[in-house]
Amino acid sequence: MFLMWIIPLALIGLVVYGLAGSNPARVFQPASSHTCPQCHQAVQHDWKNCPHCGQTL
Ligand SMILES: [Zn+2]
Image 1: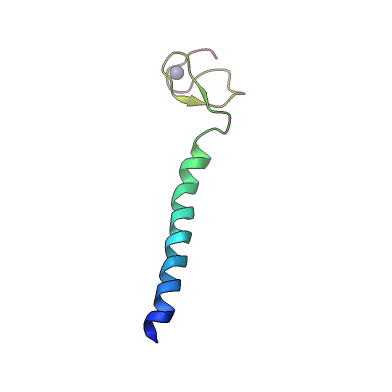
Image 2: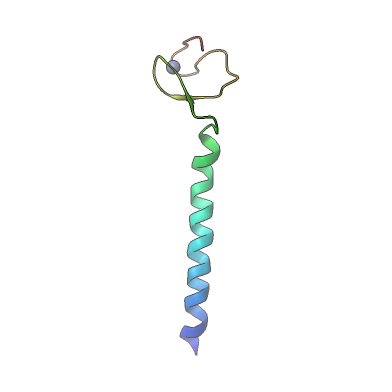
């Protein structure tokens, strides 16, 4: 009886943990996936300069 409850709860926990774990990385990465031509770091498309190397975008 105990296993019937713990297995679905563990699966839900893994799914929630996986979603929560992947969110910060997705937020940090720009959706448009622009990269700096100089240092190839991810930059926002509306940024005027690269914050990593100072390259004008
Ligand atoms: Zn750069």
